[in-house]
Amino acid sequence: MNTVLVTGAARGIGLATARAFLKAGWQVLALDKDFSNCDEKGFERIEFDLQNLPGIKKLVEKREIHALVNNAGVLYCDPYDAIPEEHKREVLTVNIEAPAALITALAPQMKARKSGRIVNVGSVAAFTGHPDLWYGITKAGILNLTKAWAKELGPHGVLVNAVAPGPTQTAMYDQLPQSRKDGVMKSVYSGRVCTPEEVAAAILWLGTSCPEYVNGTTLDVNNGSYPR
Picture 1 (cartoon, rainbow, N blue to C red):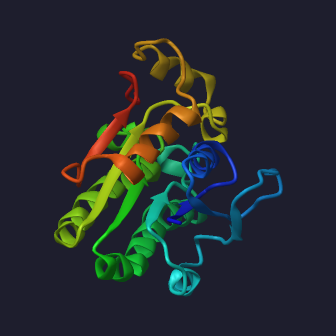
Picture 2: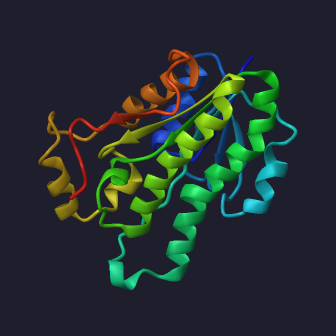
């Protein structure tokens, strides 16, 4: 049975993705720092704080993992001129350094098997100047990271792709000021937010069955939306 590791799997897009892989017959390793509000059954829970970068290699080195979904992310609604250093550090660590460390830790076994799939969860925040400065920077970075590792691992049969969701009904979206929600919804074709399950369906496709020639790409799941 193939195994997938999904980060940020206790809620939102991560939980929906874990469910999608379970339904597809995969063994799911669900990683999150807090499962207190998650009563989902069927997957193995790994309680781990991705700010612990030195612990990542040990966490995965003895596990056979066929697919990785780097979904965990942090966002704060701080003004540009008043961003606490601890918020900046957490966003940088969780959103870009931890995904990079996970890929680095899993790349050797995927190369050795000549197979594997990695899906990074970006955001439309990557494409324009974003109100949450470091969030936008890290989401742009994750898309560049995707291309860099696709180039490195592609010759070994490993696919590395990303999704860039627009406004999605998650706890992260719920914390945004109403003015931000109203602004972004003006450009959404369907006039509604995305569901976590819709993003998860795109992740599942990239992580399991997309053509092997789809590599190093970012799949937009935004319905016309871009941050303002």
